[in-house]
Length: 187
Image 1 (cartoon, rainbow, N blue to C red):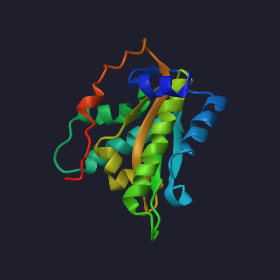
Image 2 (tube, rainbow, N blue to C red):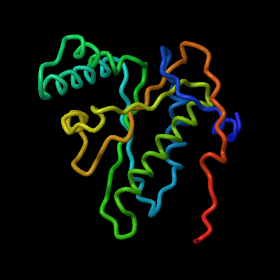
Image 3 (cartoon, one colour):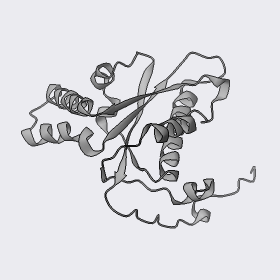
């Protein structure tokens, strides 16, 4: 698949099953991520892979965090939290590692980590791997970050779910470029 095809036709694939990407495919996913734009060559990212029983442990962490929050939490909500990491055979947590730098502000470093996440999605699509980017409240929760071993200068950018698509990929809806692009005239 050529680069333009991947860019123009990638879609999120929320229904995933086994098998997960193999080691050769994973190597390409992460090599693509490491080519993300990176002002200052800070490499402000790292990646955690979660698979097998570790997905169940992550689900327990999600349920514990939900239960520790304010208010009563239903058993249904706890069960849903436990099941979230089981929606794909492989999860990749994209972590922004924000560093103090005179010329590269924190926001730019987080965006660079987001570009790395996007590169993984594009590389997955190019290899025929189903993938979807998810976040939600738990991605921004301090207890989840601590449970995943993140340092104080790190934050979750994405939970990427990867596996085999359960059904045929949908075709992306065409968007009119003119609806999103305008010329600035300086006035």
